[in-house]
Length: 358
Ligand code: UDP
Image (cartoon, rainbow, N blue to C red; front, side, top):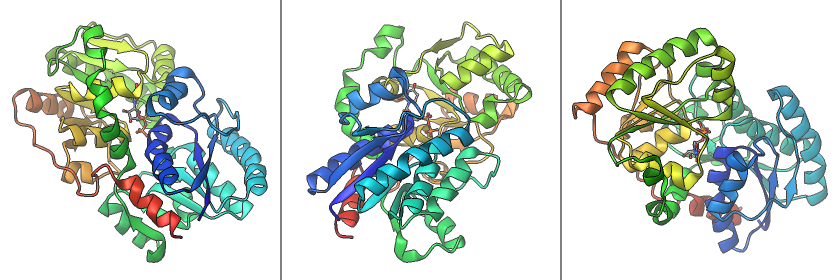
């Protein structure tokens, strides 16, 4: 295989594509980077290209903001002609965002073979848009690159043939390890006046948590109560910011809400945290890599290895469970974490080897 289109669209995609772009280039496989424009501003997109050394996209589809259906249609309308014109040997899609599912469908329509990086994850919660995106991408793919053992079981249960499925590990960890020297130079803790271990980091943006005021308000009350025990830094996703404004939720003095930060500063914040409270997928993995306790504010996780081996516990939105979990960290009762052996910083190289020889 000589010629691959890499499709990205949203923040977590940029972090996943960087090591693969490098690994393919090192093997003499040429890549065309296509950005859908799902996340398009400086804080959610440009900073990641710069920090991770990803070249500017070769093609920008300019899709912009919109609901899932509009974005999906715009991505497919714009991507199918690009694929037909360029005729790559494969199209790679990443993770579980709208661009992932729309890209995989566009690949099938254009007659291009598709690979899905981070395949096989399942929360079994059909109300999550990400769950549908994962399933659509997996069922349109010829190569399924899986991060953890549960993914292998999930794909087998969905009758996806074994020869398409490869347990390769986690490209998020590749990026994290590659950036560790830069993380040591981050000034974010100094700028925010924080000492390592003296604060927690909070992120919240999943529709299931922030879209409904009757869910968000009690969750926010619980988090606010927890922040009395340990002050929190909250890099606020634009989606969460819009909901907080719409619902008139106020931020207590024990929680420092800041704009979304770049990847290097985010890793520095995570690494210095006493605990992380989050509904993000990527943060469950990054906290495992840093051995930082992770209180996962979701009813279920599609990344069970972060609980089985890692530092995460899934506590949902229950106030007493959240407060108990924070107490357990503060009282030194939290478990120590480990990492799956394939989360070793070399997943992208394994993927690139498979594709080069395909
Ligand atoms: N992230 C970041 N800056 C922030 C918040 C998150 O760089 O202000 C990084 C984070 O470290 C992780 C990725 O973005 O690598 C996760 O993105 P997000 O939570 O948006 O998506 P998910 O992982 O839930 O798909």
